[in-house]
Length: 251
Image (cartoon, rainbow, N blue to C red; front, side, top):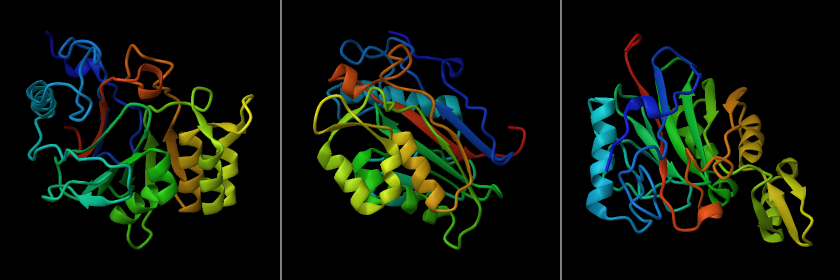
């Protein structure tokens, strides 16, 4: 059983401000056996609680942060909390405190990492199709920029449009919310189904919110099972983490 080093993580080339730090864990390592097969950080996917707690502690040890990672109990909703709140049943967290990592866990859903361009606040939100349609991205932006301050976004690994088939009810739900979302769907060969890009839907939503600097969105979880978990591709599987935090320049 091995635990990964920081070198096994993904460190995106995205820097909206020198104080902003971002990292994505991968499944590299042999900490959890089949069906998780790697470095699983998800509590509600059948893995042993003690084993997941050890993995999470390892993340915190590698980050050497001043505060514990703001782990959430994700429910596919749109609630965004301030890091450190005792009621952590939410799908997003934000902070304006240095060295307090915000995190979301995913295995096909889209991690959306947000930062004020003045480096004063960051947020992480978990955007599955339900959360996206309900407005989780808008809640995340509002949490760090309540007066419309400039925000930058990075979209983490998620299932791509080619790999993600959804039913007509998903298409109708998005189009009912706003017709611009049609751009995230392509008709599938199977009648009554669509191919849906969660990253494209998030880009459409961010554009509507006035967020001009949006990066990422190219990494597909279902196409890269060496590094990522994919619920759609694997069924019972683990979760990886996308983290964002503030730090002093140069650290």
